[in-house]
Length: 306
Image 1: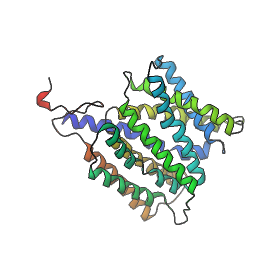
Image 2 (image 1 turned 90 degrees about the vertical axis):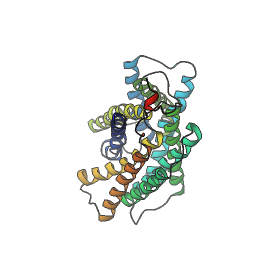
Image 3 (image 1 turned 60 degrees about the vertical axis):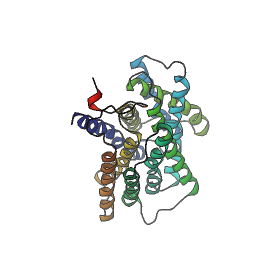
Image 4 (image 1 turned 30 degrees about the vertical axis):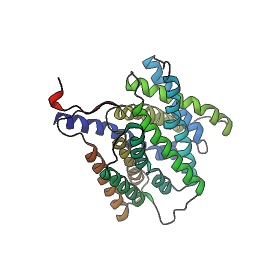
C-alpha cells in the first residue's frame, strides 16, 4: 500500500509539468513578440539554467559533460526548435496530434535502451490518447504541411530519446543539479542558432518580460525539475503518457481565457485522454510487495528487503 501511495504521489507531481506546459501556447501568443521562436526558446532555457546553476554551484565532470549536452539538445535545443517549426507550419491541432505519438516512441525506446517489456495495455493507452488529442484539438479545416509534419515527428522523437536517456543516464547528483545542467546546455546550444537565424530582439515590453519569466522560471526551471525527478522514479512510458495533459490544459485555457467553445466531440476527446492516462499509469503501477527501482535495478520483493 505504501509503495502504491508513493508511486501515485510521484505520478501526480510529475503530471504538474506537462499540465503547466499546456500554458505555453497561450503565453507565447499573448505575451511574447512574434517571429522570434528560437530566441524565445533560448531565453526560456539559458537564464533559468544559469539561475539554477548558481544555486547548486556544481558543474558536470568527466563523461557527464558530453551526456549533459546530448540531453540538453534532445530535451531542449532540437526539441524546442522542431516544436516551433511545427507550430508555425501546421495548425495547432495538427501539431499537437503529430506530437502525441511520443508516448509510443518512448515505449519502443524503453525496450531498446532499458529492456522494459512492451505492454499491450500501454500501447492501447497511447493509441487512445492520440485519438483523444485528435478529437480535442483537430478541426475540419486542418491542413497538412509536409515540412511541418516532419518537424513535429522529429521533435517527438527527440523528446522521446531525451526522456529515455534521462532515465538511463542518472548522474550521482540531485534532480535540481541535473536540471540546471540540461537547461544551461540546451540554452547554450540555442545561442548561436538564434543569433544567426533570427533578427535582433526588439526592446522587451513589460508583457514580454512577464511571459519570458513565466516560461523560464515556471515553465522550464520548476517544471523540468519535477519532470526529471519523475523520470528517476517512474517508468519513462508512464511519464510520457502524462504529456497528453498538455493539449487538455491548452484547450481549457482557450475556453477560460479566450472565450473559445467546447464541442461534444472535444469533450469526448477530453474523456479519452483522461482514460488513456489512467490506463497507462494502471498498467505500469508497481505490484504490491515490490518497491520502485532505480535504472538498471530489478524490483525487490518485500520478503527480501532488510
